[in-house]
Amino acid sequence: MPTTGRLMPHLALGTLSALSVGALVLSLVQSTPVAPRQVHLAAAGTAAASSFAIQETIQQVASGRVARQQTIVEKYQAPDRIEVTNSGVTERVIGTTGYASTDGGATWTKLAQPVDARQAVPVLLAPLRFVERASNVKASSGQDRFTYVAPLGDFITSLHLAIGGSFPRTAVPMVVSVSGEFLTGMTAHFAFQGKQYVLRIGYSQIDTLPELVAPTVAGG
Image (cartoon, rainbow, N blue to C red):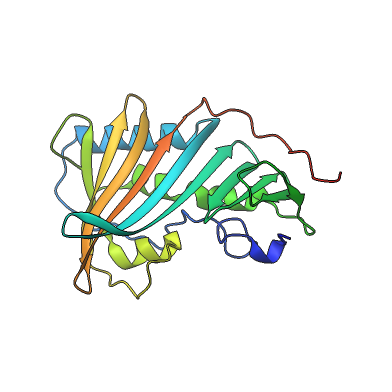
């Protein structure tokens, strides 16, 4: 039976949000006046949205094929509703009440201890806040695509992805995608210990996510 001890890092008290970028320090690169402003406004727009979904994926690639992959899906509805699915376990917090499901949401169990979703929200929004303040943005190939340089170690570690190893603070370009008034994605390609990785963070259902409600508890 799920307990609060099994909460994933981004929802457990003290280790909040799989998407926290922690102490991400952005390296300065030459930028144009237009690119930073467009990206800043798009990141702020997504952060201010009433709701959105996030899909965070990291892949280990070998010979052009995916050898290993981990995906975490989060849903956020302001001001205090969060749902996270990772490795077949879905956890939903409505205010301070937590629920868990191991069968795709068919049945739910109420968690024994309260979990305050509001504590996770600032960390959930942290990647967007850093991009919103970034001064090293420049235009990339393709319309509405931009790049900024991020220290790899800080970024990977703070995402709590189970790839393993201690990633160095090597600076890698992160491609940012913008659609209209919203930031919709971040992608990075990098090598570590002789292996190739692709990191993707996608934002979708911005302002259109179906309402997160308290589920019916089995036996309740």
